[in-house]
Amino acid sequence: MVNSLVLRCMDRRFNNMVESEYGDAIVLGNAGANVYPLQDRIRDIVREEGIEKIIALPHTDCGAMGKVYSVLKGGSSADDDLMEELVSHYPPSKFSTRQELEKMNYEIQLARLKELFPDMKASGRLFDTGSIDAPKEELEHKLVVMKPGKPDYSRVFASLRLNPFQCYVVQAETEIAMADIKLAVKELGAKTVYFVTMDGDNPRDTKQEADRAALALSGVEGVEIRMHDMRRVRKSLA
Ligand SMILES: [Zn+2]
Image (tube, rainbow, N blue to C red):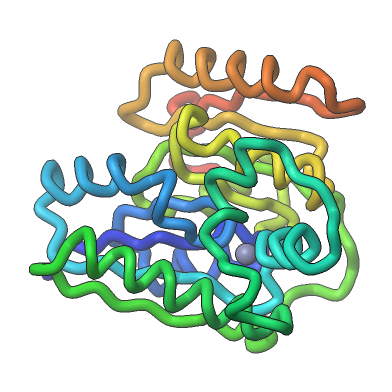
């Protein structure tokens, strides 16, 4: 079997698809499946895990691209870290519609992966979000933050008693994903952020991650940071 690494967008409609189609892969996730802030981390995982194949999964109707579009074409503002990590990678003269921006995002991320890993099989798809049968009812949005790893989402969501379709998922350390966490909270309405300790994680790291996020989000009203330890959840709960 080929060892794969998947870089997904954090979009809440993707969880079931990623888990069912890429359940054996090491998954990283952020806003827009953006390679740039994660590239050193990806490089380490490729080396440590003997990764042979990388797959980028950006998508249509992407909230992160919506934000990029409104900054570059609509004059809305963005934090410095979001400008640097995300917005700055899209030359405004190269697209006019949001659909063109989303297609360009796919091309940019794939090109960057091929540049970073010329000897590896890098592929991707601009996933059609319209093909996902997401429930119409609007559940309150949440953000779940985990370390890169296998997409064991259904077990995590079941133990949190959350619906997969209400949870944005960032799979990266806070240090390299703070812009994404802030985007989910400030722009996409996730007011509760769960920092999850998975089997094999050190809970002290989780605490540090949560503290760092709490500091970065201290100016945002009504946001709640929680920690959740999967090592205490019996396997039968899933
Ligand atoms: Zn997205």
